[in-house]
Structure formats: C-alpha cells, structure tokens
Image (cartoon, rainbow, N blue to C red; front, side):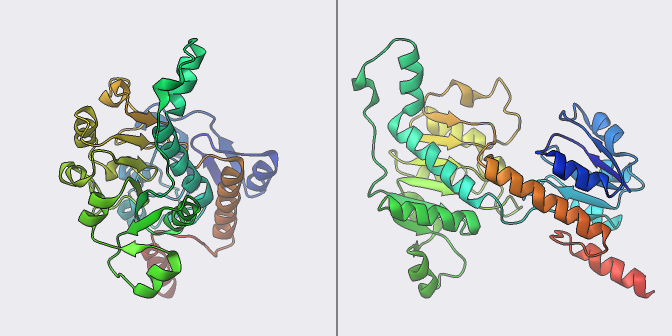
Length: 326
C-alpha cells in the first residue's frame, strides 16, 4: 500500500510507525506550492492523508491508483466528493473533534475584542502605559447569538452560561424541550442578529450557508455588536463585512477563517483596527491535534482492513457493494 501525507500534519514517531506498518509511507513537511506540485506528490498513491490544501477533481483523476482520501480535519468542502465517488475513492474525515478547543477560542476572540487585549499588549511593548486607552466591555450578562448547534455550538452555549449570558439560536425545528435542555431561546435569524451583542458562527460550509452573513444580515446587527467566525470563511461575505467594519456599522469582528487562505497581504481586513485576525488556528491545541491524528490513523487502518469508517461520501460504499454483488 502506497501512503502519502501530502502536507504537514501532527505526526509522532508512534503514528509514523503505525502507517509504515501498513505500507510504503512518504510524508511531506511543506504545503504544496501549486496544483502541479500537489499532483506530483500524490499521483502514485493509493491512500492520501490530506488537509487544508484540498483535493480537486482534476487531482483525483490524475492519481489512477487512488483508493482513499483520509482528511486530517472535519471539513470536506475543499474536496470534490462527486469526482471521488465517481472514481470509487473513499473519503473519510475526523468527525466531532476539537469542539472544546474551537469553542474556547471563540471566546478568546470575543474577549480580546471587548477588552482590547492585543492593543494593550502592543502599546505596552512600545512604552505606552496608559490605562485610559483600554476601556472595554464585559461579556457578563450580554446576549450571545449562536448560529449552528452542533458539537461546537453546544459547547459554546455551555461556556456562555458561565458568563451569565442569554443565548439565542436558530434552528429549522424549534423544539421547546431541546431549548430548555440547552438553555437557549430559538428565534429567527433576523431576530438573533438584531438582539445579539455577540454573534458566533458554527455551521459547516455548504451551498446553503455560503455567504449566509452578507450585507443585509450585517445591517440587522447592533452597531455595538461583534461577529466571531471560527467556522469557514465563505460563510461570511468578506467584502460586505469589510464595509460594515470600516463604516462602524458593527463594532468589530474576530476572524480565524477567511474566504481566501492564506489571507492575502493586500486584504483590507489587515488595515482595520476593529478586527482580531488569526491564521485558522481555533482547532490548534495539543489535545485536539493529537486526537485528530489518532482518528485519522484509525480511519486509514480500518480502510485497509476493509471496514472503512467516518466516510463522508457514503454513496461510494453503496457503489462498491453493488459492484461486489455483480
């Protein structure tokens, strides 16, 4: 079995040995510089462990022996699932990891914005010891709007209760019993945006959620409200957000993800003083990346044993079952 790790991941000696026990392992410690570079790395592979760079349909077609894509992440919006399924390639992900880590980071961004921690640190290093510059706001007692109540969203709700926050959320099925169990109030998106002091995004990127926060939605928010995005960059219309921030129609934004990553150095976001920007690191804790690698290893090992798990393109399994019966 030819296994390729196409870009850097957290890989201890133990995990490396587990992969080497399965076959010929080749691991790259740099991000691909181009699609051609990526294809040159994976063209002979049967199993590819991949991450943020993504996996286009063209790359799949140019790897004739490819049998499995093991994603070292939860999101799979950057993988051409249709092309993978058509070729009979199993795509697995790491489901339900880092929810504590990401939830904590959402509050780190919110607290930084409200208490001006980054600005205080920067100015102190410049010799400016003037407390009057940093009058901030408390989270205590504020209203939090949580968009997306998966594992991360639910953990965000739990943390919010520790700050004595009122929590609003959006759901297609506003079950009163679920609302009581979670300690949230289900409302419409318009109501959530209009009443929340902090809006935190925790939905996957799908055709339905792409640009779900655009100019119209930002216009509904309070001028004192902040937006936190630790989900996916394309959930927010970045151009509309820049305009809202520049014109102070919302107070600020904490962004860990962007429409284009890495964030271009000419991005207007870099010139705004009411944003906190981090390079897609909300998931990044010692505990979470070890868990991510552990599950990825298990996904690969179970695939080799003929019992694939955490498969996101389930149609490929049905296809293989039909072929087995033919």
